[in-house]
Image (cartoon, rainbow, N blue to C red; front, side, top):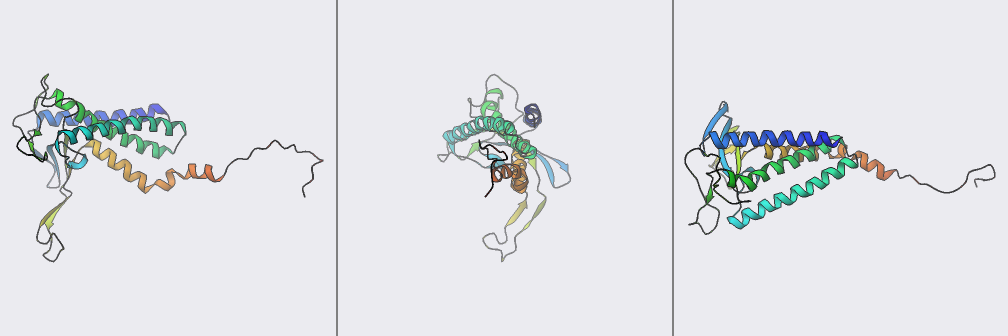
Length: 235
């Protein structure tokens, strides 16, 4: 697979991801929810100060660590993609790696720059010593030279919410008896979906993706400097 095709996949995912995030950020109020398909699919604007799929990480130091981890992952991913393209890995595996890379890059852009370019965003609650609580805001966010956070401290924008199944656990169910549940409850974005889709596809098709490399290892070519002629006798 050619490098320019991989670059096209990455650019396409990042552009769609960022375009939708910026639209949601500037046109939805925080926690605003609008149905897409009936009662099981919504655009639900939330800001995620932590990891993927709504997971939170404590404090400014934790936020900075997560963003730096994303940055290192993108740098390593760049080297890894170039390497597997040169070694002509399975096309499907390269596409999955490109999806994972694009997802990481998309969320890295949010956490690195959104705090600097938007005037409003969730910020840590100074009254919470644990660092897990964040303060929301009112009104629509706008582009501004005076951001709500410094470099590497922005929040990731999430918007897809698919509560496809709602109900209550039966009373006999361990730990969660009589408690309400929602499937699927996390709010996510295009970048999260690209990462998860890439990882799941690799896990499902790993035997097919790595068959070529395994075959090369199992059938090494042995070269010798021996001469073959009529005088050589095979015992």
